Image 1 (cartoon, rainbow, N blue to C red):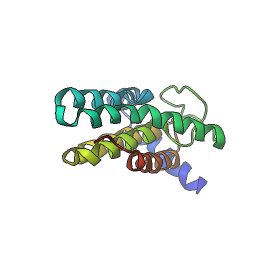
Image 2: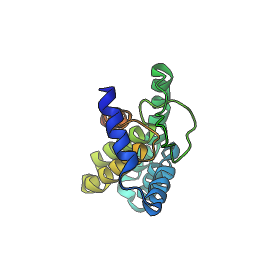
Image 3: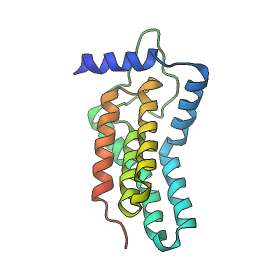
Image 4: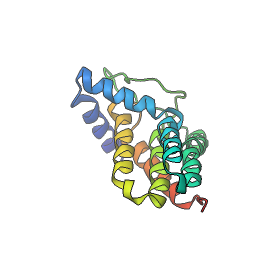
Length: 165
């Protein structure tokens, strides 16, 4: 598994890299720091969708909560971030721990939770979550398996967290 993870990571770090694409990936990833993108989506939903305001406000908190849970898992697993010779990461991180990806966890938790009460947004939400997740190995910040684990964890969290009526 580790060898496959490294092959996919190396592929993602050496294909499709132009200054414009790298800058876009960095901006997307930055919007996912601490779940900010998902907090913003939740607050915007609350402002514009009064009948579901409670669900939107509650879901605005799911991203940051997911990141907290994720960090606890990182402290247990202690997997270091990837290091590829000649391919330094194209971003910074608050810790040197990699597994699972907090960006993927928060994104899939929020996308799952929001799609439970706003199914009409499901495609856009999961498209945004997947895009966020893909930036992580593309930028060299995570192994692909970190992202998959984060997506699974986030999806589970988004399904089990009770939403207000």
